[in-house]
Length: 284
Image 1 (cartoon, rainbow, N blue to C red):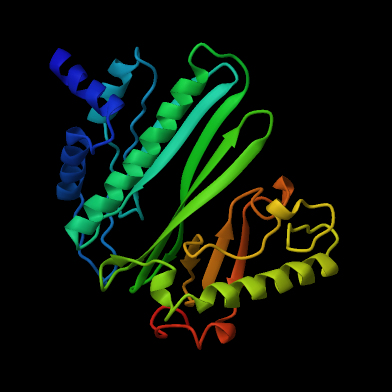
Image 2: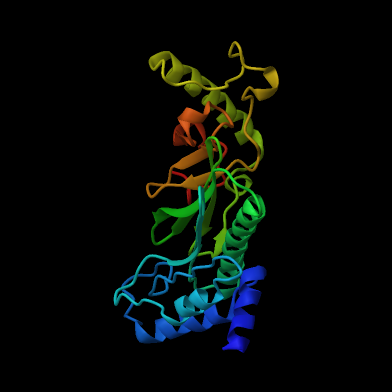
């Protein structure tokens, strides 16, 4: 048991994918391997929860590692979950784990997702070490698109102190070509930055005119410092592609609007993009 706890401490402290996790996933796959009915992303048949508490919770962690629930049918994703609750302080951090035909890409993504989760948990430990007061980190994932061609997966993080702030990061994967898409890769050149930025500024103004509850920090807005006004998107603006092949841009809370607006998304009309697109394979 002492050797096992030593191994678990390594999982607790370091970003690489735990050996025990690999073994559990393999064991679950052997026990619940059904036939595949379509050429889609291969998803491991289990939901795996790892409860990682403080330094004194290794025994519970070991129990969780040993008792992996298997639900008989395929679920869409494997989940790794860091959880801890203190007085007025909590962490609930869920990291996705996908299974892909391209094992190199699979490993790259899964290690990134585990590293993101562990970094958030380490932040929680540092923020709450010897400190009192309200602090919470909640992280979850959202599958926006899962078709024969594309997988778009977002990781949403909410941090709460006196108030809450929310952010999201998306990955969109071409399942057939086995690559992660970037925004620049969709377009012939960087003209898309101006095309999309001009559309967004007009759309923000249109929405504010139609609904007084909506407020954006769009360029030219009174009472908004010029440094905080939205002028143009980044070349690497956060995005995903919908099931009907539309481009959606996502903006974190507070980045282009007041906090009450939350995370803001805009679906970009394909009609304004068609001349700039490399092809219609992804955006139609």
